[in-house]
Length: 97
Image 1 (spheres, helix red, strand yellow):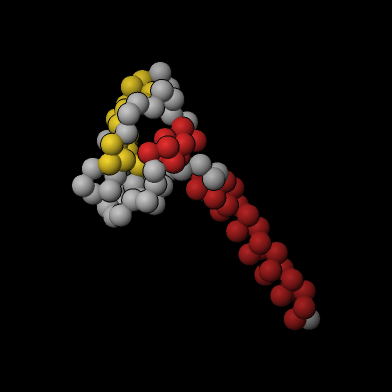
Image 2: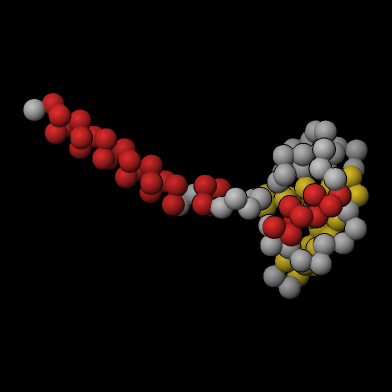
């Protein structure tokens, strides 16, 4: 009697986890997520690596990047036909500034 109940509970948990994963863009994609809050800290990305992460996030025409005193690579790029100011924090997150 306990086995069918346990099986039903396990199936419900797996279904719930799969649903949550399919509706969470951070789980679905390995692309960096665009955010508006930068994590301050020592940034070990080179300019070329930062440019690559920004381009992987869907930005084009990434201009010259410079690292500020908070460890954020910053510059300008094109997204959906619009010129935007962007940054990349030490965690690899793309920031809209």
